[in-house]
Length: 184
Image (cartoon, rainbow, N blue to C red; front, side):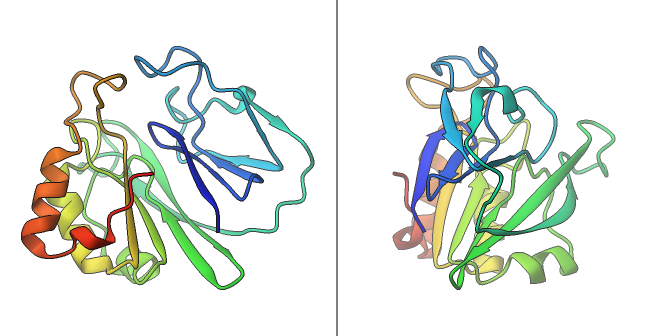
């Protein structure tokens, strides 16, 4: 599976599926998104995850199998920021999990579904989502083959409230799972 990081929480898979495109101007420092795909999916309706109009649909014939797992954008059952959808995406025997703006530790049923993925795309910047410490605990519990951090601040982009990736990497090093991290 070819995974292309387009910024923030947006990814393109095999040039045919875009997940969580951001609307123009919704993420400080990111250039407007202009891409194409066969299909686009969004984990929730906030502007930094729902820029469907920024993706040109070339055809509606994606070869991915997509399972939706309901979750919350906060640790108050969605009372603060609403619902979030976890996507479990499979193709040719590979399993990718995109956690969107997950704001809580997964319950037993959710954890069973996301466990043992080939790729776990996980928010690590905190404030609006889980933080680096919670993300590390989820990575340990879910045991993915590879971890792809997202939704964090860089030197050039991201919300000022978000943490950088540094603490997440440090915590993964302490837990002995940093060899699973892929950032590009």
